[in-house]
Length: 144
Image 1: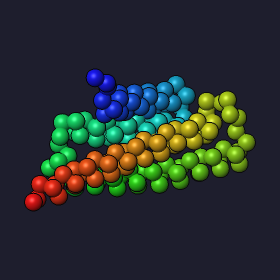
Image 2: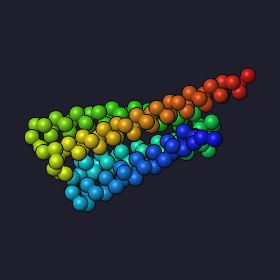
Image 3: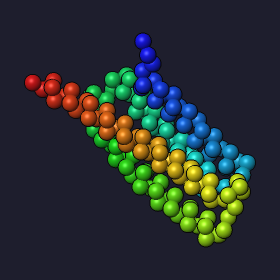
Image 4: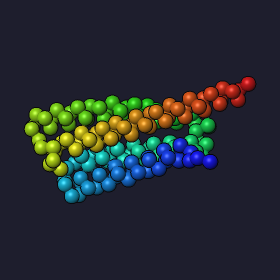
C-alpha cells in the first residue's frame, strides 16, 4: 500500500507554513526588512490556508460546505493577483535602485517571497477548485 498523495500535500503545506513564518520572523527581527518579512508572512498564511484545505478534505468537512471552497478559490485568485503585482513592483524597484543580489536587505528577496506567495495562492486556488469539483459531482449524484 502506497502513501496517499493527500498526506504528502499536508506535509508539504506544513513545511511551507513553517518556512513562511520563519522568514517573517527572521526578516523582521534580524534584518529589519519589512517588505520581505511581509511577503514571507503572507506565504506562510497562504500555506496554512492550503493546509487547512487539505485537512478539511481528509476529515470530509467540505461535503457540506461547498460555498467555503468557493470562498477559498476566490481568496486564492485574489492573492495570486496581489503576489504578481508585488513581484513586478519589487523587481522594478530593485532594478531601478541597482540593488545587490547578495544583500539580505535588497528587494530581490521580496521578489522571491512574492513568488512563494504566488505559489501558495495558486495551490490554494487549485486544491479548492479540485475539491469543489469532486464534491459537486458527488452532490449531483446524491440528488437522484
